[in-house]
Image (tube, rainbow, N blue to C red; front, side, top):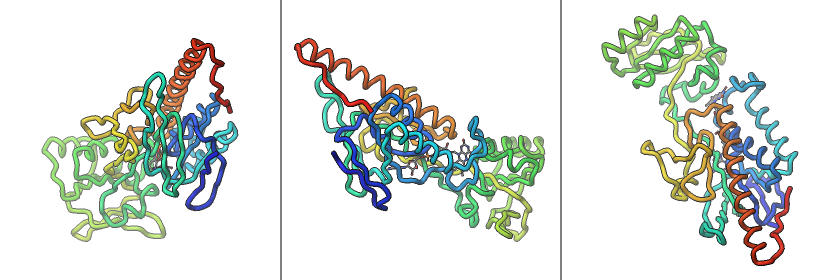
Length: 338
Ligand SMILES: Cc1cc2nc3c(=O)[nH]c(=O)nc-3n(C[C@H](O)[C@H](O)[C@H](O)COP(=O)(O)OP(=O)(O)OC[C@H]3O[C@@H](n4cnc5c(N)ncnc54)[C@H](O)[C@@H]3O)c2cc1C
């Protein structure tokens, strides 16, 4: 048995020498996959660094049946469900994934997952669900208020700030579109060009949609009593706002996948088929690590889809192994079910 420990020492568990699946990333995508796989009686470990993307938000919205739940509570429930079916949770950060054997009828992939604390796990398949990083605009106050009253997704939090004075920090064509979308939730929206230029067409359409425009560069967000109260611009004017939307630059946590040589789209994001299968045999990916648009419910769905595809792939391999043994007159290989 190999030992899985943690840098923080929270958890040390005996793990099988060869797991069916290592899931790297224990957010909505990874835990949903692990739930499906453990219920399919697969030996599964979820390695998680414990920094889900939506951690700064007090509540999670738009997840049917769990709307308004604190994000950490959803994951706590998921972890309990996964361990309830015999899954292993490993607190830690995976630093590399390597293929130890070639693909083929007698050489199915064995993948090695190395963790920062020196733990090494071996698995027949690996699913990477490591999420992404939001790079927010470098405006004083934005990072501090991120996920509270500096928001990015009106579908997640627009309803909570409906009819309030809202701002949209601009500078890019996508931000202009964002302002029109945010307008769906409030009749009082101001678009801050933040020193960027608007085309005549963009300006007219904003005015037509009753969106205010402030052209001066933004200097900082104003916070009183732990609440956003306004946006200060270079003239010193403070435009009263109670929430501001931004479009962060999203950067996938895909180093494990690119390190394996997974093919990418022209955009640079790792490419998968509709089940999450990457170009590297035995390696799947799901959620924000490969899909910037995935909401919690989408990430969970992608994790579930990948899990079913992975189990099907393992069933195919198990059947081929059994058939090969049968033809040689040998007993069928035994694999421990959970
Ligand atoms: C402020 C904010 C609020 C949001 N609110 C909502 C909302 O209300 N509703 C909604 O549907 N969506 C919301 N989202 C989007 C939501 O966060 C994502 O849809 C969701 O987190 C994607 O799930 P995931 O499993 O792909 O990634 P994540 O939830 O980010 O999980 C990835 C996990 O992998 C771990 N990890 C990363 N690298 C490694 C590694 N090398 N080794 C081990 N573990 C690793 C991370 O620590 C993390 O725990 C919000 C996003 C933000 C930024």
